[in-house]
Length: 218
Image (cartoon, rainbow, N blue to C red; front, side, top):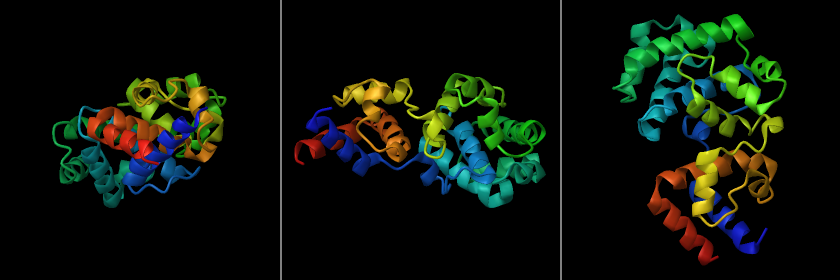
């Protein structure tokens, strides 16, 4: 990898390398509650709504008691709708409230409330993990990709989890558009931040220009 690639990645991490889990106040760890919260966040982020709104809605749900599968199940449907509304997650609030309740039930029934068992059930295989994630209500390929990009911070066996959105953004920045090559530019525990940063610049041309400029002047 070239020095220019490394400088671009450093500039990207400085400007945009905050994971979406961090934005939502999730202290991600390989533990039941943080993994559940990440699943909720991925569910919210996957709709056609601004990421900041999805993050705010996740914070409201967690504050209301939905930070564990049991807690989410104990919230009434209206309490979930109200929490989503406080986060301004308006257009999708009613359907999302229903799906999150169903997700909580499925996590408790199939994985006994612990999504570490989801990783085990996948056999530590990325494609199988995506298949299992898509069995949750509201989790399709987009949400599954989000979950994988973020959870690789605590599931090293999943690395490098860099989907098409991230790879396309890498190419636009002049970086290698291959996961195995991008993986060589960062430490393993930085891959989740790299993935988040790439997705952010892919959505914001101004931020992409900022990264390019910062890298050029390093």
